[in-house]
Length: 137
Length: 137
Image: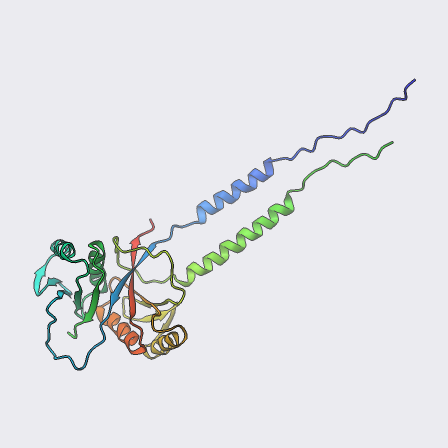
């Protein structure tokens, strides 16, 4: 008569997923609530010409587009323009020569936001050669 | 009689503890980095500006708030101190060290000009203006 062997009963290891899912869910909610979107920052390159003490006082280089920024508006080659026509004018300049140097003269009293807006329009039209000069008045 | 196997149970608790600690560590350090650049400066919008993929690690960020106060990394400094900082930056990392000016939208150009002049005095000519490309909602 065969001896009856009593095998130990091995229970299947059961991994309880519920608490883990609970924790992961809590984490997910925490991060969704606390994450705030970050502003996308852009950097507008400019070139600032070194003042040349030997240059004549009111010498105007011939091949430059002069863009003036004043507290109350913009000028292109001394003609007052609106922001829209400035955009159009810069587009026209860029279509002729994208490497054209734009000389931006900013009056001291004008807001920085105006300069950024003008530089943004230059970037929009693909103009890269920008030099910023500060007017003394 | 054979030894009864203990139920093979995987204890998840320590693992989750460790993972949670790691997550907290990374979240707080990432937050610190973001906070060091956070200011009260409200930058102008430039939706067409280029996005910089690789940031030059030498970049010096100078903030100019709406009242024309100059600060670096949230520390308000005067022009003399700014000059000292920029001269040191030039001596350490060369003349091509980029300077990013984060000017407030409403700051007068006069204040920006002062910073640009100090940069010129320090021998740094690679200037850029920071602006918002996209505002986080």
